[in-house]
Length: 333
Image (cartoon, rainbow, N blue to C red):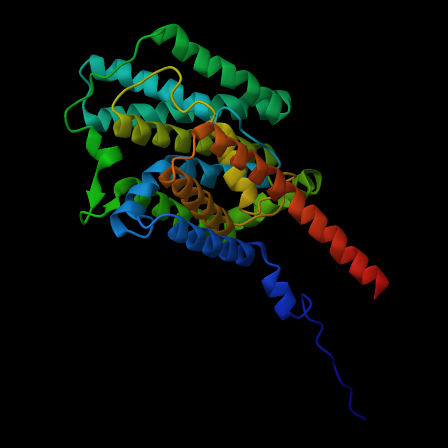
């Protein structure tokens, strides 16, 4: 008598419908629609140099979106990133007036970001205060410091070669900013999807209590992610200040909304526990090409903000509506 053993798969078999309903696949389709529409609206859209220059509009925000994705997957949020940019840029402006060189300015910007992010993480984890409350408070605190220091003035006495970081090109075509974003995206994708660190972040986002009892140092992870987010905001401050060549207290005002929009549009659940870096990268390209196309036809900035707000609402509502539709189909089948 022989016995047969049937292997039980770890997950249900994939179907074409499952593949087409993946958020990343839908973003690729959306990106194709945006590129096609923009190329029909403006003959200048598909120009290689114009496309390369369009990355200046979103590379700094995209860098913050990478670390913000990890923070949100871990069930937290950081609304102080734009204020951290203002604070870091202010510190860089003061250091430049004191005679600091380009390497020192870059270090100062990133270190200020690390300290500001670390303060957020310490308050959230040490005193168990919700992240949204803490970062709304520090958003006012960090930008308020910048306003107190600068008032109505601006700082623009930067070294002559400081512009290279934010305005320079590799091979005469690709902006350094965009290359930095791509490199960081590859590193973050590897960490999140290919290491134990990434699996622990997903575990914390899905159930922090269970993760804690599984031996994962939840608060340490959350503190490190806030600090990393501050470091990326500091790096963005370096690039943005270099690109525009001056520091003002209202620099990067409102960027936190756009960064969160990119992350949520990329498929990261605002409730934590799910999302991918490739999704965030695709969302960066969709939103970047979308706003670039609107800019080519002279759509005002306030109208773009309305579209961004609608995209944020749609990105949150669409998965919920799709999930309910699938549940109804299964209940009737």
